[in-house]
Image 1 (cartoon, one colour):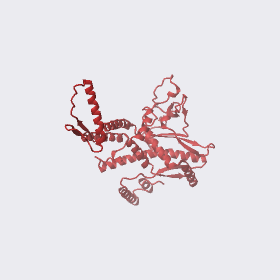
Image 2 (tube, helix red, strand yellow):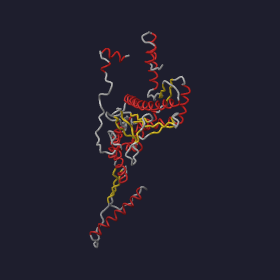
Image 3 (cartoon, helix red, strand yellow):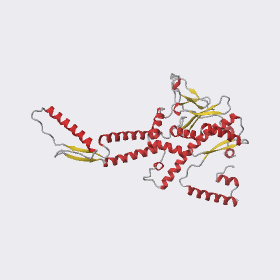
Length: 407
């Protein structure tokens, strides 16, 4: 084996290998006077941000579109591979469970968990007789807390029910799965993919609020500047009465103009000046600012403008690179779901009493940006591999490895 050769080459002895951990977890010191409920490890961001992310994905058009795009593309369909002498009956049992779970919709829900919270959080509920899985429940990620078990050197998951009880529910790691996409050092909590977009979303909401307020006051196209001749003051009027009459006249005229301008009619006395003030230049600046904020939100959501149809300033080459990067992101999501489903199916079949070597979930290939070009490249790779095989430069096993063919 390669690792054995490595040790022999470097003249290292197995006795030099420590049989325990040398490093240690850096756990923030917490006061012993704190209530039990508050003695759990905190994430690198406030738990309240989870609720903000939920609202942003629902309300913000860009994050909502990114959320749906990932789900639509990542759930490409899948097949199940069973390695067992009882493969047919095992596949039949898995199919029955998949129908019971409504598996296609369940995968969508898991993808949504990954997109919004950065982790899969599910609990497997087995039936009373321990003869298979009854259902799988999505446990809200924002309710999960971790505590470090120093004796076992593991992070143990708990659920906060937000009740008056100081004790949290300890989850069983044989039936509860927490699978994060990405974590930081010294923290078991997942980092939500859209987290860095929140500040730009807030800025976008402020801009939209200001535009809405502006449009109500003066309209988006422009506003009418009406200059009236100043009426003379009557000899019997006091200064207060004169100013009050002017105010009443302006209010009455404003109401009349407002009621009739939509009909295309403005009636006024000679000497009145009417000017329409356009806001086209101001709107251009607002549009540029809005586009800039939108791009910041897309970047914060780990996407590229070309993925959402924003093609300005994007070449075909860069669009291809962007999509390839996006495909890698989708494959990371698929791998997490693959791990979760494989564990669930293996547990289900084990509880039913069947013997097997392995159960694998294989997702269908993701949509290609250039399917014709990919097919041509695949054909060339097969031809080159066959030439190497026929010439004796490689064996069958190597050829299968190059073509990514499983035995």
